[in-house]
Image (tube, rainbow, N blue to C red; front, side, top):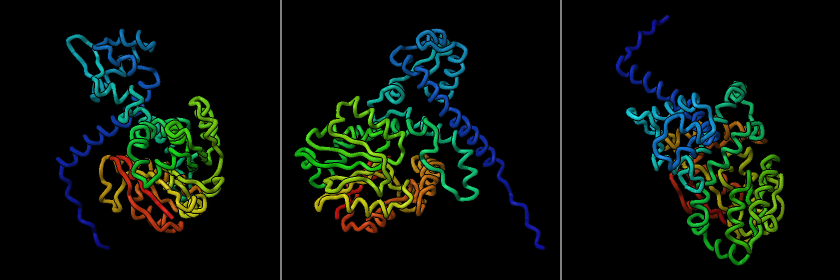
Length: 358
């Protein structure tokens, strides 16, 4: 039997990796710290307040001082707040104030951390499923995944859907202004559906999602937004979305989660009017693994391992495209559904937007 020669280890590289791992552990814990700060109102109490001592921050937020002090130290160590050692005060810089407290900003981040934390909480259950290859349905996750998902995606939709994505589609805005019919499949809590309904009061909208809890939330949100007269939400699989003759069908960051995306594409083809349009919003991704070895790709591969791939595997067919499917694979799905025209219409650092036509 051949004896394997010991592999030489570069001590300096090993040390560098160990310290990088320490940073990773700190970052993992910081996701929970950000969610904590968001839920307890600590960032909002710091916003625009100038330098505060832990006692002052505790009074403004209503949180016990000893917890505030430890939390603030962790935030200072991570560069989320600044610390003045001479005064013993903490301050939230204006850039972090926008990213952590302004829910109308495209840079708003608490939802990103919330869905990440919820995903990590569920990771032990998915780890066990990975041994057998079984799936794990979206509906099986905890509330932070559902709420964090909406809070993560909504700022991007608010910033891009109306000014950039819809205008990039051929003739769609004109149809919606005149009074079109729209299906939003995989709508979750309905933020994308409601946003379109508010912008196009002459059009009608039907959102669908297989998750009953999300549809209940979407119906409440439509009432609160004053658009329930033009927006309906239905519990339905993508392949069972009701109706036909739609001028526009949308899917926001969900096609890759479906067990049978080609079957869903066929259903969309049947839902559309002859001159209708299918808008597909997917995570930013290249077609090759090496294209996605970036900070954004890393985050999406992580979410894909714990959320997207298990969700698809829990359904019939279980194609499991993954969050980093890329344009070529999405194009294959679209053509398999009977569409003859497919193009990239728009993009952001986080999303690809495709237009498909019959």
